[in-house]
Length: 376
Image (cartoon, rainbow, N blue to C red; front, side):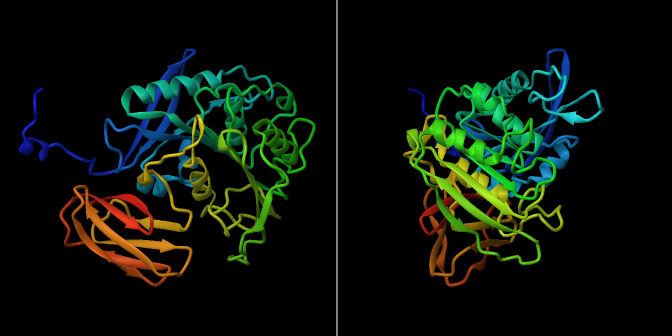
């Protein structure tokens, strides 16, 4: 066996120095299909990372969705890649995903599968941890993938989307499918109560609860109304203990409109009591394509009590925000286990001065969770 000298190991980069936003395209069915890929700085070439597909809404595009339904700060800490595909133009001149409306004949399921193949040829993608989410038409697209590409999709989350009525009888997933639906009761575009084409949200939830054999009735709680000026409140419903440990979750935004909760780009009716992107990743991170992950890599998951770690990469100061105020132990160490900083926090927000640390990758331990941190 050939051994690599230790001094050469020290020369091998352990991390990429900066996150990357890459505009790319593939050819599918004779059409150039574009996408925007976000690769976090914590991505390590050769180490399989989860992939999140983030689909835009009708008339929107990949660039807008990257900012509107923004997962990038979460990916910087959790280490997953995000791809924002672009839809094609329909007969009305609007970008869309073909989810069975109108006369579109674009094969967006085939495009998505080819896109996954293309990205997997360029990056180390964990094939068991590919997730789909999207806004409105992008939420419908996520349900389409759950029904028609379930051999590649581990879990989905829809924001203001739904299923077509006929899908409730034709959907054919190949495995139990974790599903999250976030929807406003005053949505004027995709009505919560449905119509002749769109299934009512309660019917969508009932389908997936039954398919996954989740327990009913759900656990229900109200989200604290921390922003009283947004004109709406939120309720959370959890249907637990499904096959393979999967769950169905629903955030019901009372008086909420057609909007992505937590987005900075929204007015009255955009709920600010929760952050949809954060909740979606919390949900996704529990599952792979086989169901609930029993043994997990701690640096890929978001602690449900850890609100935000930023910026990452960091130059001088890293801020940790918690959603509780009990004493919490933190420790920063090198990849070789050398502790460079430790202490206790007694507040919900605290700063760590890392200006004096050498550039490289570190592991931040907060409570029982670990996170990769890039020091530039």
